[in-house]
Length: 602
Image 1 (cartoon, rainbow, N blue to C red):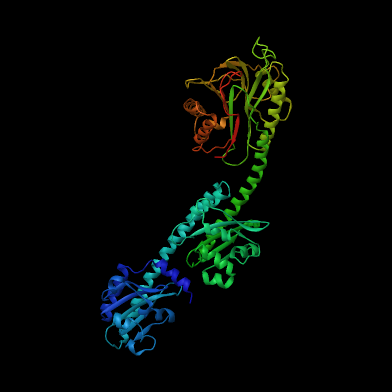
Image 2 (cartoon, helix red, strand yellow):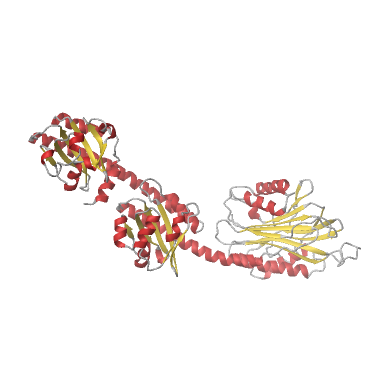
């Protein structure tokens, strides 16, 4: 007998130890037509019988609507699949010791099988008399007809629930195709898998095992960590576990219950699943031998054809997501290493505090061409001896920030070339003019295959006694922001054309501002202020507000505020920010932390 299938049909019927109007109606019809004091619709669960339909039982049984199997005649109908008709139950070896005789006064008994569409016997429709009775043929015929009608009702309920379940599983499949395609990394993939499934019959545990040279390793779920999982965190290729077998044989493996696990696998597997409170598991290998996807249930489980098809399809989506994630992570690692190697370590400059922030694109597709730079040079336009006429050699500071058009390794490589050319053009110009350096790079775009171009702000800071002088030129970049003491923020909007390889002779201009003590200069790329479905002017206005509100605190804390402000936006571009505060004159600066660089992923 297929006991798991029978119990699954019972579960789908949705009837238990509670009154059901339809089942009570069948019990009343039996009592009236067969003329008996007690009639029951009795369904046999794993360890008890329940009476969703009942008439005539005395208390406490009438209120409980259930008994243990020690009081069950129904179990004999289920085990044989045949009607059970007894004139006097005390005279039959099968029933004479049953507690149903003294406790429920079951003397004469006639029970007809209740079946589902697959032939599972779910219970019995029974007529009970408290006295010995010879059952008439027409009484048994009426009871059999009512049992057939009650079975039809049970089948309709089961079919309705199956349709609902199939619809729910189709919905899971549809959501899986969308959700798993959006996964960002392996842990996010597992998190999304857990969210796909819910309800009493859905898996109580879903996990992903990835293959490597050592065997199978579990991808942890950050929101559902179980201490016991350490026992099955890694499996050797030849381990006697269902998942390892699915991997070795590259086929789906299903274990319906603990008995099948005990009989088909090693003691270590039984201990491992017992430690997790699991007894049933479905293991589906991923494509190209990447690993195994597992669904586990705490109770014995019946795997339907539709359910297996849904889980197999979901495993296909997971295979695609794993392939995509591993591919992106490999390329992202190489690109981020390239990007990281090109990000400048900020110099320590007396009288200045500096901090920088770099955030890769949130979609993890690739790093792009965003960069910043900061380095000292001999003082420029006033000569090589510092502020005009002082005779003291004091270095100037060069700052730049830019963005090469594109979002891939090519953009990152071009960024490195442009940054180097901009440095060379700056150091080769005795006056260290930002405009002249940008013009030199622009002319290079005209003759070298550097791609579609880019934007940049290039600047020089010269010490002037108790303050600093800012000279900058803007090649189509987002405008720098300057916070003055007291909190007012100016947008330095002056700009020229992008770096597009313009004809020789393009006029690029230098602009000059003086920076008093406690002023803050902020350079940034457009990823900070330009978001999908929003205007870039609104993004700049928000950056102005944040700088005004938080710019008087330590710069690292201010950069953290900027990072958090991006959490609500789906960013498809990198973000680079270079912030600088004037802490005092170079001769007697206010102590401040050295320049710091932050790189993070939201």
